Length: 371
Image (cartoon, rainbow, N blue to C red; front, side):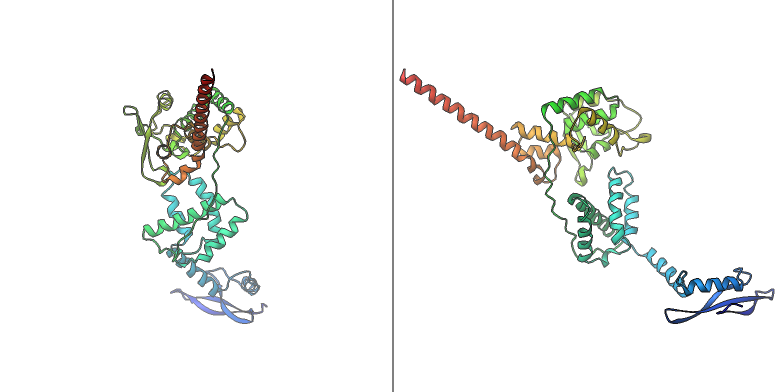
């Protein structure tokens, strides 16, 4: 009744009970294929089911037995390979407490779509170039750089753990000319401080105060523990600042007052998150304070206050660039140079003032001689 379906009779184990084993014969892509469809009792196979299976395989809707075996073999083999996807899972598992993990997850989607199944040793420069060009068409330059930095970190993680070989080239980071320094006018700063003082969320309010008074990064504030604050000697220990060595900065009077009056819990963290663990987000609260203060839309509540801290010090003319670099825990002076023009402006105003004072003295002397 069913074309391309036949069976042979066999027996079941030691019972000797007869059983039919069904086979199908079909052509696909011009090639004749003859393969087993299933056993009568073990697989509950019937001539009708074998015929339906034959049609599906003939139309390419189902893999042939050979194709299925090859796919299973490839899947097993891929589990043994340290692909970028597999390295990412291992890398991610060891960074569950990092505040930037959410950003890394978002950025990894771009890597996964194009390079996830590849092994690092099989990558060539063209692969990374194609990824960079494709991302550049829809993402900001800084985001493209972050994606490539994540790819580099994942591969370096695998190489350092001895899990894989690295590519035979260096992954170059695109140059990003992002020297934006967020600033506030005196009126805006006063409005912000009023909004902070009125807000009922003491965690958000004090986080913003600490960012303004110390210039600490958001991640550094989230990781800050009470035993990192040395009230006696007057220092704050910053652990792992942006991947660099541990640093310490002075605990100034304004920051000391904030911390001494900040509520403590059983958590070791100064600004704990859920269940007393490390905080990873506070966007809603700080954005509410920003909105209430009427700050510009593009002003970032915590990172912007770090910039404001640096801007005020640089423009005062009383702090040199080396000292500012140490206070901001920048790894290189190049990062601090974005504030250099503010110090230059202050020096220029001072030089102009000196010129004016000298000119006044000369004019005054001339008037005395005439008299």
